[in-house]
Amino acid sequence: MTDIKGIKILLVEDDKGLREVLTEELQERGLTVTAFAQTPPLSQLQEWDWALLDLRVGSENSLDFLRELKAKRPHVKVVMMSGFGSVASAVKAMQLGAHNFISKPVTVEMILKAFLEQTTDDEVPDQEISLARMEREYIDYILQTSDGNITQAAKKLGLHRQSLQRKLRKNIPNK
Image 1 (cartoon, rainbow, N blue to C red):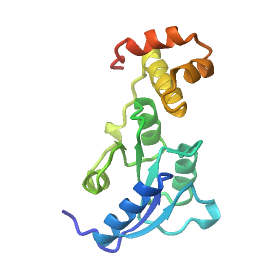
Image 2 (image 1 turned 135 degrees about the vertical axis):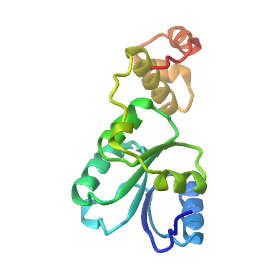
Image 3 (image 1 turned 180 degrees about the horizontal axis):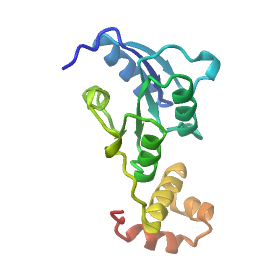
Image 4 (image 1 turned 45 degrees about the vertical axis):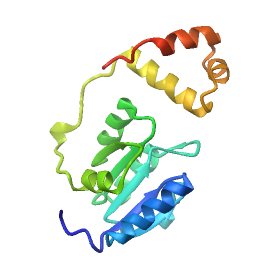
């Protein structure tokens, strides 16, 4: 593996336990970690080599922060991570300049591999995502924000509970 000692990394993760574990394990490998529970203000941007950003930090979406970070510090190599595994979000992150996108649960080995992999612009998907896939990802997101409560998610979506349950039984579209 490439020598990574001394690399400065920004870590934005709202889950305290995961943030602390990742900070400790990355530091053990020789990286200098600056960790935040939420996206830091632009005035606090430092000279990081890498940034590991959780896609959803609390109620915020880190894609706006990614856009701002790349505008101010274009050399920063960014890896996005998400527990939602949304194809649409991964595509958008890559289009905004993310180097890679990984799905949680993550390990330090997965993170380092994501940063060290070589990617090209040809690897950023340009294809459209089907309406069925987008709908399913949105439903999954609403269900996640409702802590798995189908009745609450159905209310947020403006659906009857049984209709939402039928939609959830369907297979997830590939595209």
